Length: 355
Image (cartoon, rainbow, N blue to C red; front, top):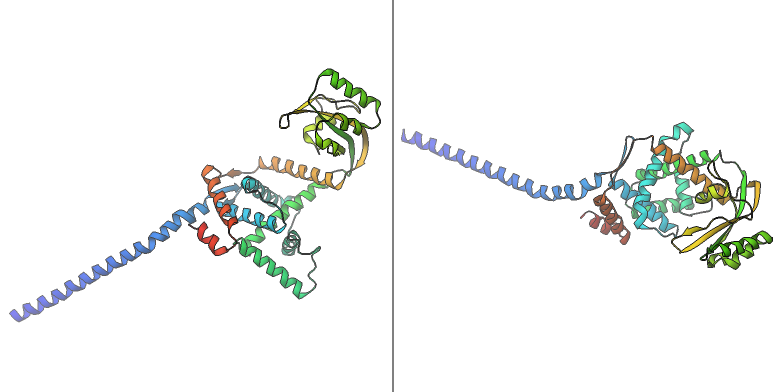
């Protein structure tokens, strides 16, 4: 009997030891999970979640903070490749607006019969980089050089090719929409030859004196140079040349008139307009009128951009568009973009951005 009890005690002791080992193992596993999860949780809270917050929503398409940072980096690097200055201060708002406009253009593609092929994406990128004057990769060496340049570009901004293609594709939809809307712009339009005179003395006697000389002269440009205190007018900047309606929207009602007001007559001085930034008054005068004058390429492009802006303004009121931009988001995105711009080494930039 005693021997039997002893054996039982031994078995119980073995079971207790096994239970203790199991408990210790469970405790060790829990501790390990906690140790591993702490940095993961920190990464989730400090990196992943902030990146995934919505910065912009157009209909069903959501753009996260990361999408916006990627978009800004893309345009920043592209500007650098083209040798242009990139203003980080205004880039956030401009990028948000451009993202929204590109998405609206993409959503309008079917309505206007617009498509974008993959080869057009490479062509657009190829030309933006100024790699060659045209898109003809005639040799294997040319193609390899282009692909190497593209890979280098994407590595520098830490972007995969699919994301890159989406950005370029939607920007092409925007450009194609601009061209389509521009078909309605008449090549021949009424133009007026306009001068600007900057003065400080707006006494009636001084204005009358300028008006008399303008009325009696066949060379208004010389009168402008004589009386304008703006040094730019001496260099010809006060001579606006032939302009159609829409090039200077702030002066359209004065120069071309509208339903509420008559337009300025040739050789008639306008009322003084105050230029608060330069602390001067501006007078405007028309020297000549052409009822049918061909649009210059520069004026056509500007009117085309105005037409596109009007289209986006009208469409933005019809689509579900929401901005997730507050001070915290603004500061967070600017910080990420500025950090990325300081470093050319991708790994170093990534380490700092992920902190």
